[in-house]
Image 1: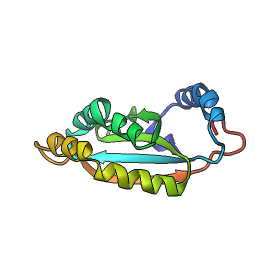
Image 2 (image 1 turned 120 degrees about the vertical axis):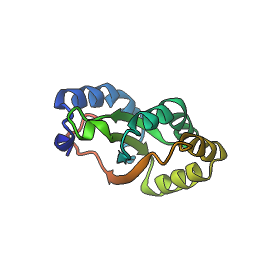
Image 3 (image 1 turned 90 degrees about the horizontal axis):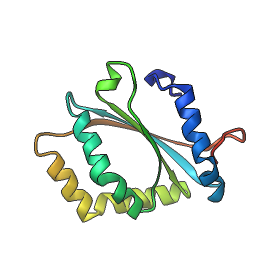
Image 4 (image 1 turned 90 degrees about the vertical axis):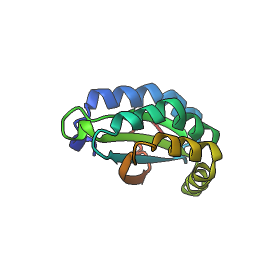
Length: 138
């Protein structure tokens, strides 16, 4: 699945093995959401800043667990793409988390402030996935 973005298998394996203990400590029923954001030209740095300085903290407040964040190595995707994985207790919880996140006053302000120079994200893909029985993270 990640081959199209040039992510290294070793990097992903390292991230998943590092998270395996934390994964086992939580319910095996959680669901993972794999999100891919495509940015408008030259807007990826603004998106990374927004995540680094604000978004992840707001995710945490709303029960979203960040698993990891990646930028593809190879152009052209390395210039406009952010991929990340969140964990939620269930699909229903994910829906609630996103509704709460979208209504959060701090998020609304952060989004508006970060888009004073123009919109950042042109397209979002979201896929919900369950880990296989042979995955290092559950």
